[in-house]
Amino acid sequence: MKKIKVLFYSLLLGGSLWGQNNTTLQADIVVYGGTSAAVVAAVKAAQLGQSVLVISPDQHLGGMSASGLGYTDAGKTQLIGGLSKMFYKKVYDYYQTENAWKWQKRSSFNAKGQGTPAIDEKSKTMWVFEPHVAEHIFDQWIADHKIKVYKNEWLDRNKKIDKKGTTIEAFYTLSGKKIEGKVFIDATYEGDLMAAAGISYHVGREANAVYFEKFNGVQKKLYQHDHNFKNFKINPYWVPGDTSSGLLPKISPDPVSKNGTGDHKMEAYCYRLCLTTVKENQIPIEKPEGYDPKDYEILGRLYQAGWKKTFKKFDAIPNFKTDVNNHGPFSHDNIGMNYDYPEASYERRKAIAKEHENYQKGLLYFTATDPRVPKKIRTAMLKWGYPKDEFLDNGGFPHQLYIREARRMVGAYVMTGNVVRGETQAENAIGMGSYNLDSHNVQRYVTKEGWIENEGDVGIEPPKPYKIAMGTVLPKANECSNLVVPVCVSSSHIAYGSIRMEPIFMILAESSAQIAALAIQNKSSVQEVPYATLQKALLEAGQVMEEPKK
Image 1 (cartoon, rainbow, N blue to C red):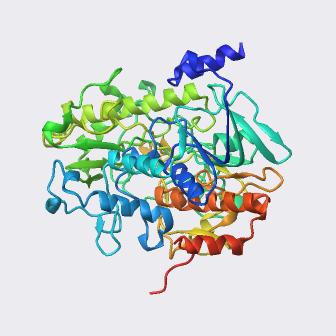
Image 2 (image 1 turned 120 degrees about the vertical axis):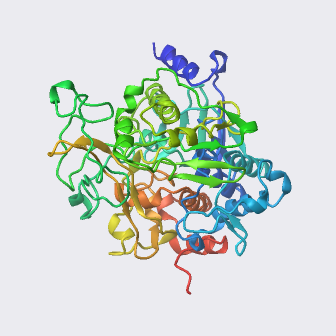
Image 3 (image 1 turned 120 degrees about the horizontal axis):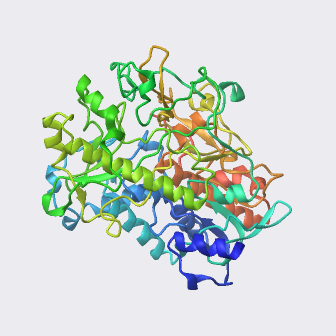
């Protein structure tokens, strides 16, 4: 029965019935994942002379950086060093060629980056880019270092990993491969290998009391962005004022706990859509399967109430394309539809991703066609379409759902909001952070006054850059001695809101690979790697460990 179940999951995820095998693969450092962090960790390991394997569940490398998030959440770019900075230099180099500007003249591209110039001539870096460009760079990086990547290889979560004491010896994939290594790096957004290895982790929001924080847990009426209904009194019932008529879709019927209370709910996910206004390069916005305009009743009422910020987060990237992000009370974030994702089966995760895809496709279709949407906005939306030259095997739609947060390790050191907000300082830095404490909304509910409201949105700027501790990527020593985790790091929910940015993941991935190589060299656990040795190696590699002096 178990073999049948494994075959089913393999087929479900695009595997082949004939892909079952008993192959054993070995390397000094095994990287599990296909994210930007996975690529950087592998490249660094190869540069350090280690044999390395990338076991990727994904068919496309680069994670969110290659799946629509082209408007980089950079923070202070002077703090981004090493291979992370090198990626953005490679983006800059790519767009220096005329061939890169197929649909737009370079001279006409005057977009800004997020807190930084889109194209920084001083540092020769570029912080906005098309998805296919990022994937090309990651693929080329892997090829240049002759790194072996096994794609569409999924950790068999129903088969116990081989672990001797605190040492992982091997894990198994759904196709039947046995993966052996000296040190393992879990570079996935979900932390599946970490969980399978028996590492402590947390899902959801801790209460403020757990780490003596201020902005963790439930955060009603914080109103730090425009992602709320503060200025709009929208009735939550089909018949306004009539509770017996039922709640509109996308509203939780559950009462909301008091501020600071912990829960197991997730901040919202979405796809970062890449759209274009170039008609020759367009796939039209069409009605998705299962479309029901009633699912967008809240948005219809918002438009009727005067909401006008539909295109606020259509951030420009090259060639008349955009990175579309959530903005407003009812937008691309599919609030409340992802709570079970972190621990869910592969089948269930795929269903969640599909529901998000249909929701966002329906959102665009509703905005372009529904008579409740002002004609001016409908006309503007009809100018956009999915790009023919992106996500070629997926109809112009991104491959990767934006898993803003899933599992978070409880490791050797827990980063908290107090560190990010400068109230305390982490030691033994392996990188720097500077981005806002940023959580997207977690739930949509009915207030005591009887109106719709969102909860969970936080956006607090740190007073200054902060250090990210070595222990943030390391499990507790008594749980595992040869695993490093640069994505699902040891952090509270709200601190993770600042850390969870693609440049930081790449920074932590490089540091993780350096830790892994030193542990192999010293024949020690990853926790026993001397920080002084690690720090020296990272500084020599161009990593930034403290805020540069002005």
